[in-house]
Length: 305
Image (cartoon, rainbow, N blue to C red):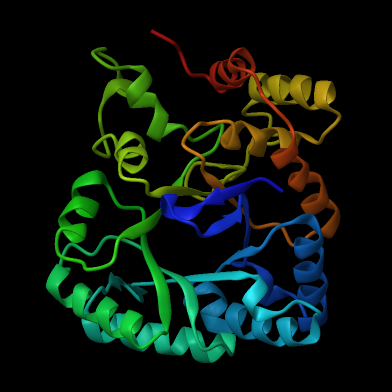
């Protein structure tokens, strides 16, 4: 499994992340099998959030991990906080309270990474800094990151924090290409040339912030997968062409497209199907040429200027 040095440091993590949003629907034994298969495939990073399954996803994962042969110290556990019912909350008290709840549900003494799930326009960076200091100095959280933040939000927050932000989770897939569109369409009078996120891709690369992609096989805002979807005939044709050439699945081809980018992204995948996970893991082992990458990009309906 390809490794990524998260945040440009020495913390090597798998290029593919096991997303745990849907595991609340599974039994502890089923999740145990999923964890062990992930480890067998070289996937060592597991992504949670305090809202997944109302906290049940973390509880089931903890139960499953104790049933498995996998040691806590051999995996990377990350979770997210900040989304509440009807509003976002990045206050000091809520961050600390959420982190404590996450640790309790996961039955662990520490989190490898804690991400702020969504930007809170009422956030006060000084409060966040105090929360991070408390969690870091007490050994409860080893690294911090953000999710769905633009360049200026990160820069503003980082100017106050004492810990360097190591990751930013962003929606990105072959059918949701916003973070690369603006860079390709610089100086063009078209919709894709509009800078909506402060050149977040380049900002993260420049500041050694690892981009973790969510909805890696989806289009729209949780509208469904683009794979074998009649809305994306040309994209599926291009993915199948690449998949057949490399003897991999179309799912793996779509993830390989993400991993091909030199930003060294990590792709979060949320499948709970063992066979599909095995197929997707092959994405980290194949190469993709520049022409092949652009062919898939154009097949999704993107025009090159």
